[in-house]
Length: 455
Image (tube, rainbow, N blue to C red):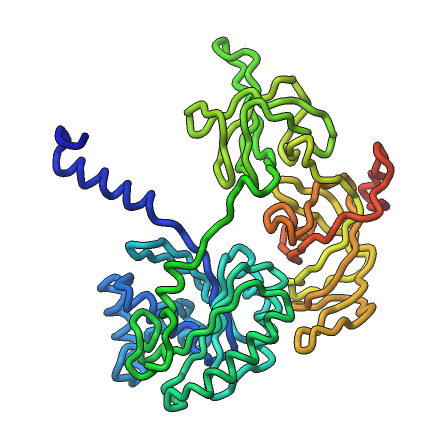
């Protein structure tokens, strides 16, 4: 089939085939200060040959200027000037690299308690979290905090990387005790899969290549595990959700009556002929066409971006959600959720906010803050009155218009939302919805007092 192609065309075709054959993994690193997160990421990039020559040269120069003989690989991710001066990570550093087996998007998150919100940001879309522990210190409070955040965010896979094994003489009992303590704690949180790996990020032991110093360990290296861990789920196992992002109405002589609904499929599979319900209106129709990048197809699945056409001319706009009529979520204006507060300004009962769910943004009022979570022992502090930056707690909201929310444990995409400051558009809080409750009677109207927001 390729005999008539030029060598350049054959090479291009082979590249496309290789790209199609490789999957993508989003993962985040977390751990206490000085556990070696940035060094681990730098070692991954360096030993997998994912660092450009000029980047490595810059790191070597910066290391020499600081009096270090060997390159400090942590500088590959600690990109902010303040981070380099302080020797810590204070923001989420995103890096992209690839091996012949898989493409990676990694988020190196901060270790300080006051930057827990950054870990939430980095792990919110991650399919795997690497939690580092210093072999000399073992499991500490911040380790438990990061494990709890990974559990709350429903991260499917967690890797415990016991780092600095070279500083404990590569002792197997030290690793075994830490792995058992962490695994027991994480399992109590409901983390579905935990893999423990002993490493030395500085020396490169068990990061990309197997360590000769730990022949008692027979498991995968960090990179081997990242390359082979299962990624994604079968879209057919999830109910379809299609948030409308844009309505296409060319109104040309060629297409006078065309009306298409563009967006990204959040979950599930859509087929021509499927009966769908438009939420929150509740109107029903059927899919008559699916346009995927200019090609008409009979079926599409998450996370493809497509344009749908329907059998009926309905009033649909950005923010509406299309779902199978037999598996449509309930709509509600009353939401109870677990949230992580991200802003320095506290979140208090009575605050007026904007709630952004998929492509829909509505007004909302904080009606109650029932509890704040203490991550050290997973206890609930009742009626805290407010949530400060980095706090995780439960909130009760009432929205001005109905929302089609799924429970977060059923769908990370359609069960999550953001709370936004209506004055300046600042993101305040990240939310994970529980089951809808106390839904008002169908057809109930929201009060629309722009001054009082009295819902």
